Amino acid sequence: MARKSSELAQGSPAGGRTAGAPVVVVGGGPGGMVLAYLLGRAGIPVTLLEAHQDFDRDFRGDSLHPYTLELLDWLGLADRLLALPHHKARFFRLHTPAGSITTADYGKLSTPYNYVALMPQARFLDFLATETAALPAAHVRTGAKVVDLIRDGDGRVTGVRYRDDTGTHDQPATLVVGADGRFSRIRRLADAPARSLGATTDLLWFRLPHRPEDPPDADVDLFFGRDHYVGLLAGTSGWQVGYSLPKGGYAEAREQGVGPMRTFLAEHVPWLADRADLLTDFGQATLLSVDISQVERWWRPGLLLIGDAAHVISPVGGNGILMAVQDAVAAANHLGRELSDAALARIQAEREPAIRQVQAQQVRLEQRAARARERGRPAAPPYRLLRLLTGIPGARARAARANAYGPTPPLLES
Image (cartoon, rainbow, N blue to C red; front, side, top):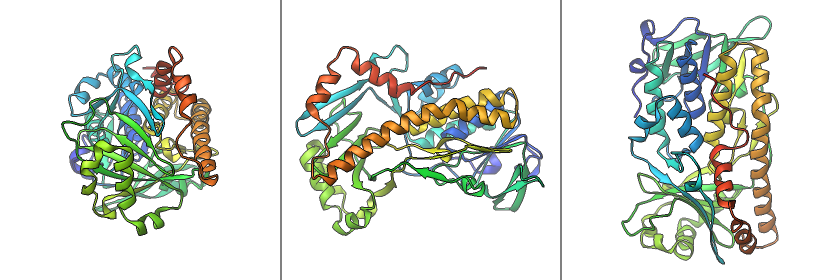
């Protein structure tokens, strides 16, 4: 659990509020928290506002890629973070009715962090919130819900209005950064709609316990049946299981209950069959509506959107946190030089090609799955072709590198 806002707001005036902070970051997800830390570390006064009292939401992304771990190592934070419980995922595998394929092997990467660290996101964010709040230039306030943008007579964003348990307050800012996720309130207040690129799948997430006899090399795996697939993530608190649905199929799935999910596990993930009966009620599953969308312009005068607030990434592949962290690094590089609208435009220009590349790949996968459903074909990818491609020397290392770092990863300048 995160500390209460009054405990996190270090070095601030009475009530934990700061007057005239040059940067206000709205949203305490990975992108917002990393950006607040980097700005505070650079001596730029920054206040982070998080609407919830803590970061403990279930089934948030748990993947910390090698890029993120190397960044934290450069900042001197990795050792302390990785002293917290986590799981080192080395492989990404696809399991089809025709056979299993390892598509990526992170162990082949030339880095001390040749794995994906699977750690509950709340634990990661709690760690970063504490580190950020310890910086003299940075302040972290939880339980602070932004309700409006403040603008000057020319329409320029000059701050935010937020509500906490003591009332409503105005927080002036030279720059407001919206990092408040796929359902971004800042995006709506800025009238910056996101255009959907056509996701066709939803996921139902639930947990099942670990057993000592479970496969030791099961890390990040996809199991395909005819009409559905299951994504499986190892972790410190059991298995996270994501059961795919066609977009808009939640009502029908709820009517059918947990039976089809239990049957799927028994048929396609047999080593989980001995505990599938622990899934007894549909209320144990959480719907994640998969989305792939983007905002045409990520900035307005005095305002910047990053992460899912600017471009929603599908959870398939676990790229969302990586892209948000890289947005934060690029933003910190430019904002460290100047807090200007020109800098905001340069941030989008630098990051947008990588985002478009990642989203285009995800859209292709979604379209292939939709065509398979329409034609009554199995959802599984072509096994023989994938086996041939992944058998090419270096293919698994290249796939791991592509997922570990993404396209054109930014380097922190200072």
